[in-house]
Length: 200
Image (tube, rainbow, N blue to C red; front, side, top):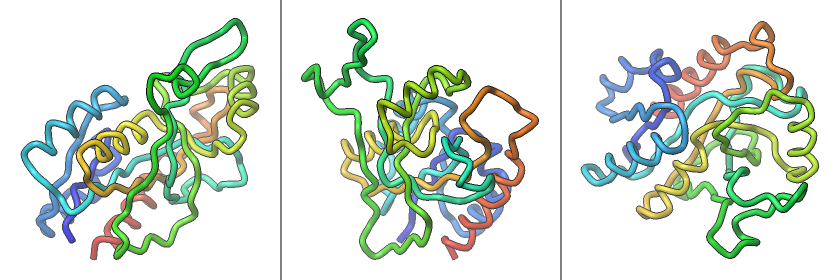
């Protein structure tokens, strides 16, 4: 089976580009954010029909029980900001009757991904304020990770009927913004080691 590898930035996939080229596996760099991702992936799937889409990247974790650098699978991803505010109450898009905000991995059954699985959210603004983080955790107690693209990939693949899975490495914790506590280098290294081993 030949996938289309999808990443938001060149940096997330750079260690594997030569490997992918040698293996004749296509890849797509979408740009950061769900809008760019949905556009670029939707456009790409008009020209090619891969056996499945593999979305890879880095993510923030809401709990420090997941060590930095851990490679995980996001099985469920949610557009956590899609809805409306009613004073201090958030109304999800489902409650408004205008669509859905939760999307799922549709990995082909013959693929075995032996990774810890979590529920993620996809956001336009990554969290860095303790108050908003606590509010989110109260509203979505199962949330474990945060990215800016994942649910958009799931949505496009759902609409195009292409199997899809999402794998990310934890680069930071979702807390008050402190770049000195991040380890993007380790996350990208571990992510690409997993990717190359998985594709062999």
